[in-house]
Length: 261
Image (cartoon, rainbow, N blue to C red; front, side):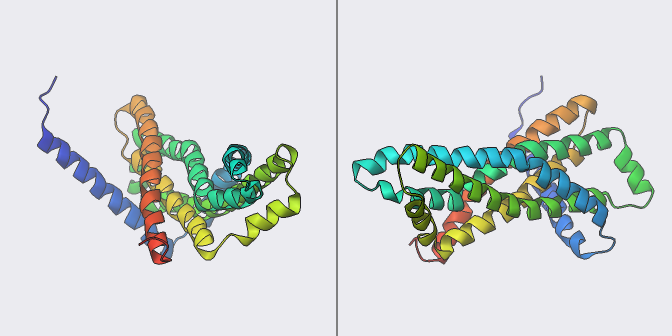
């Protein structure tokens, strides 16, 4: 067993951050360069967007329903049960919709990207691609990043809508609220800050999911065991990054709109 070397650990982590940053930067640059691999991009959009739709719909629906159910206990104490629609709408659009959708997509697709690219790495397919003059970053990474960012935007909108529907069903059937009262509260109390926050976050989270998954896939070492290790690391790293970045994005947007001093 080797001696623990903190300097070496710091060097390794700094190098990993550097490699990840370079990969993320190249994936953005390649969007504006030829060739664009449209077929690969559409295929990834189908796998990421349509493939993730069932789990996103289920997560959004039951999150909205349980949010309405849990909030009713506190709101009813103050005679404000009619505000259930407002609470569900703001919570889903601002926070729970983007974050939970991103975590679900990260669990499904970051692991898939890491395992797929990791398998290609250990079987030397990526080296063969370079030998044939094809840029692996442009061929493999950029289509996944672009597709994930675009699909996350629409998946989050669907999750928000389904979550509001789940809250509405719970409010009407279990809490005895009126449908028009629920929807009017949900719609009228959404402001620009809520919508902006809810639409910017999935774009950033989608970029994190794809770049982290691709980074760990392309960094795979050690055969099939390395592929499993990379898959696990990709999901953990993407999930943690989403939660950390969520705090800072929320802070910036709230400061931008002047709602936080």
